[in-house]
Amino acid sequence: MPTVLANGVRLYYETYGTGTPLLLIAGLGVGSWIWYKQIPAFSPHFQTIVFDNRGIGASELGEAPFTMRTLAEDAAALLRALGIERAHVLGASMGGFIAQELALAYPALVERLVLVCTSFGGPNHVPAAPEIVQAFLSPDGLNTEERVRAGLPIAFTPRFLSEHPDEVEDLVRRRLAHPISEQTFLAQIQAVMAFNTEDRVSTIQSPTLIVTGDADILIPPENSRNLAARIPNARLHIIEGAGHAVFLEQADAFNRAVLEFLGATA
Image (cartoon, rainbow, N blue to C red; front, side):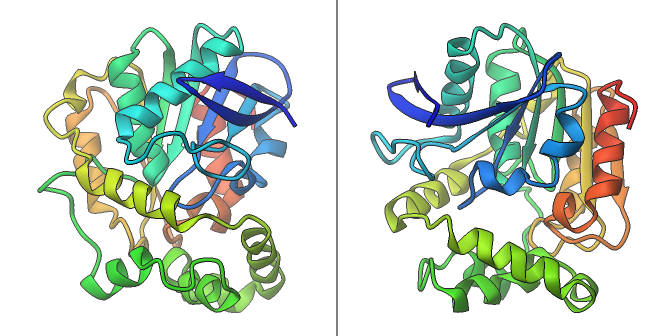
């Protein structure tokens, strides 16, 4: 089980392929397993690195509470421990929060930046409907099949859920195989609520691609438009008919957009 000591905690990671490093940063409550549709597409072109954020999967929690900057420091320390001086960075949802902090704190480390279904946070974040926020952030039954299935309509469109039952069942199995502690979940929520880069994202130096699904009900696509308006020379790519988990729901379209932006042949 590969781990490295990074920023005071042992982080679990996996690497695939060779070439320019590409770090994938997972969102709230999930870890390296969530990239199962990206690793086969990205690893023929890049050294694709996935890892569990602190407290997730096989990574140590360390001290809690923590901030998004803490998680960005973890990611930077992971890259340094692997001997990587510069990498492409892709973060989804909360992983996009971490990726922003990483690009802001370590501009020399981030070659190109991909922000997926995410936001700059703070008071001008465009929120989901209150009932969606409450359901998503509740720790009740966190690792139960009932809770996992109840969360699917928040992450995916009704069309995907009805037309791809085998994929849905596979996703449920994968999530149930990777439980999360309530302590880590609540610490992540606290860090999410405190996150705000609105006044700083204009200083991001890395070429940036912002990707969202037009049917995202958890982090509405207006948040991606707002990010694109503030990050210099950012590209906005909206995938039609996709929900919050755009990288799973429409993986082929998502992977093509990312590979094109990173200069690879899809």
